[in-house]
Length: 59
Image 1 (cartoon, rainbow, N blue to C red):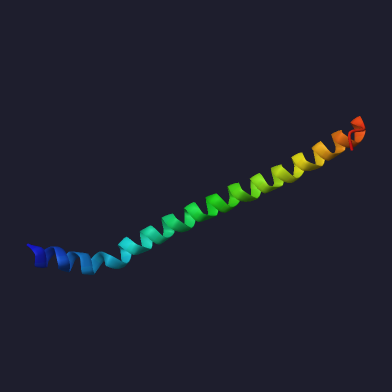
Image 2 (cartoon, rainbow, N blue to C red):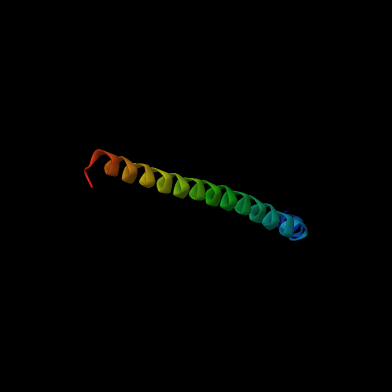
């Protein structure tokens, strides 16, 4: 039984790791996209806060 499982695993091992790699790449791209969006949002909000401070005379 174990030798059969081992043989099946060895036949399909590359597909197991390829799937994992594809899922990992997909998650990495999603994370990077979200990170980029949040960085842009922080920059935009910083500019808005600075503008509001300048207009209100606090700066």
